[in-house]
Image 1: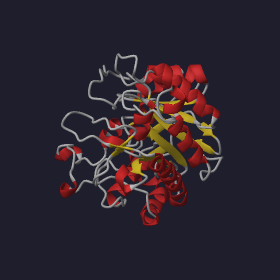
Image 2: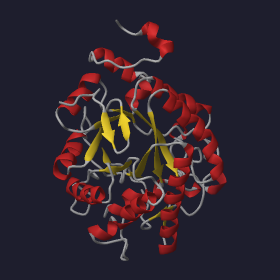
Image 3: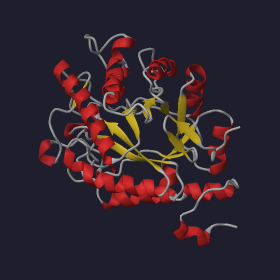
Image 4: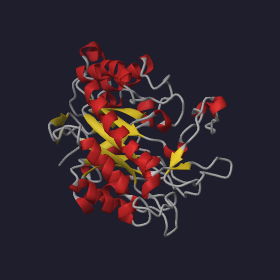
Length: 358
């Protein structure tokens, strides 16, 4: 029986346990560049025993940033400092991963601690916030610009170029962000996609961009390195014209056929009228359903806060990896803590050996 500290082989990579530092936006970049904050933030979690350390949602182009302070990988100059980060993560026995993202209609906002409000160009934001359809997030938010077919092709090309740069930067796991109301989620959900061309209407059309991004990334991402996709597995809207778990199951089945290795199972974030009922591990039924119905590996995320809870999810087959966010903000050394609590052996950094429980 697998448990939290069982190793996991995905393609050419062996993960020392099932603990993942989930991508967490830090809103601490200037012009997309990583800096010392990102080095310490990600590096300390690698020291803390996680098997996979994921960099935050990283914009594939400037207009795809959530805020002006998002991490980016849209130009070659971004690579150098990222190489420093991936090298340090690797030295700690962890695997460096990156999440590629485009914010869609949720772009051009201020950081959460400055109000999370829409920014006009005069305030540091930008024009031409793009989406599948000109549907505003709420009445106070300007309507986004509907992407043309040429602009869609550019988005696909930007994901591909970003994946190539990520490989050069030393990342070993690639995750495509298709959740939380950002661009790819906006395309798959009928709530935000009202197009009538080949990218709108039917399930096949609405999921077309997701498949095309995956295929474009695979042209430059090595076949022996893992490729993940994060999905919002439900919109949490009781409406026939919304994205539901059964849609995520079918899309996951298609992504598995395209050689995607793991579905990172999140939910919500697309519309203000969502009716989420959060609680401990409230999203694990989604990862379990996708895992059981498609046979693809899944990651569980969302209010997983203890070693016993995380271990239980793995032991009971609800997921193959545990993606943890806020708990790693509270405890950068969660992996070391969990190994002691669960009485599972783990290698500590030699600099910290004197503090290892005996």
